[in-house]
Length: 485
Ligand SMILES: Cc1ncc(COP(=O)(O)O)c(C=O)c1O
Image (tube, rainbow, N blue to C red; front, side):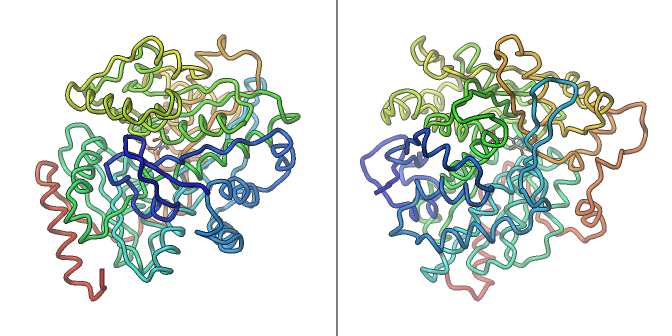
C-alpha cells in the first residue's frame, strides 16, 4: 500500500486521494510518499517504447493504490487529459544543430503554452474526479508567477465541483500571461491581480500559507491548492524525465544529463526523484536567473532570502523555492524533525547555512549556475541566428547554464527543458532580437492572438490587504453561489 505523510512531522499517514485533495499536509508540511518506488532496469527496458500517456500510466500506477483508483479510471483520466495538446506526441524533442548531442524538450505544447499544462491537465481533472465521486466541492487557490495561473484557469473551466482563485503579482507577469488568465470566461474562475507585492510571487505564497493555517477558514471554504506544493504535480512531472530519457538514450543504462530552469524547484525535485527511482541520470543542471536562490544553496550551501529582481525569465523570479524542502527530505535521510527545524530556522532568520555533510548530500549529481539577464537575451539571439530556433527566456536560461557548465558535464547527451512558448514573452523576444523590430512568426501563437481580442475579467487588490480582501471575496462568492460547500 502506498501512503503519504508530511515531510515535517508526525506519523499520521493518509491515502493518495486525501494527499491530493488536501494540498498541504495537515501540519503545514508537504506530502511525500512513505516509500519511493524503485524501478529495475528490466522494467525500464519494457517501458522504453511506450507513448507518453501509456508511460504516465505505468509510472503513476506506482504511486496510486488500486483501492483509491481503478486501472480503467486512471487510464481514462490520462487519455482525456492530453487531448487538448497541439502535438500528437505531446512533448516533442528538438535536436540542436549548433551544439553536439544537445536536445530541447518542448514542454510547452499544451493549451496555455507552458510545462504547467503537463501537470495540471491531469491534476485538475483528478481533483474533479475525486470531488464528483464524493459529491463535494472545493476552492483551489493558486499563486502564479505567470504560468500556473493560466493552466489552472483553463482546466477549471466546466468543472462544477471547483472554484479556482488565481492570484498573480500585478505588473510582474507578462501581458500575454495576464490575458490568458483574465480572458477565461467562466463563473468558477476568479483572477486576482495583487498590486505592490514587494517580493513578487513569494509574497503570494506567504499569504496562501496563512490562509491554509487558518483552520476554520480552510474548513469552511474547503481550501486546496494545485501549486507544486501538491504532490500530484511532482508525481506527474517525473514522467517527462522518463519520457525524454527513452527518446534520447541509445539503450537503457546510458547516463544522460538534464538542464532545468528552476524557480520553486518542483520540476527539478521531480527529476531528482525520477533518478532516485532508477532513471539513469548523471547530472542535473539547476539553472537560475539573477535571483540565484537555488544557485546559492548548491554553490555555497546558503538558503537566503534577498530582494527580488525582475528578470526576462520572470516565471522563475522566486526567492523561496518551497519544493526544496521536499527535495531535502529525500536527500538528507528522510528525517522529518530535521526538515522542520531547518524550516523554522529559515523562518526566524531569513537565512540558513547548511553544514558540510548536508551540502554534500544535496549536491550529489546536481550542479548549478545563475544566468544574467544579458546572457539570457544573448542566448535567445544566438540560437535564433545560428539555427533559426526560438527559445523562450526560461529555455534560454537552461541552455545558457549548461553551456557555462559544459566542462563539468562529461560527454553525456544533454536535455535542456524548454518550459514555455516564446509567444508568452513578446517584449523579451523583441529586446533579444534587436535590431529586428518585428516579432518573428515563431514568437506568435494563435491562442495568444485570440486572447488579445477578448474582454478581461479580474479583481485587483493591494498586497497589504490581500489576506483580508481574498477572504472577503471568497466568502461573499460562496454566499452568492447556490452551490453547497
Ligand atoms: C516557464 C517556467 N519555467 C520554469 C519554471 C520553474 O519551475 P519550478 O517552479 O518547478 O522550478 C516555471 C514555474 O514557475 C515556469 O513557469
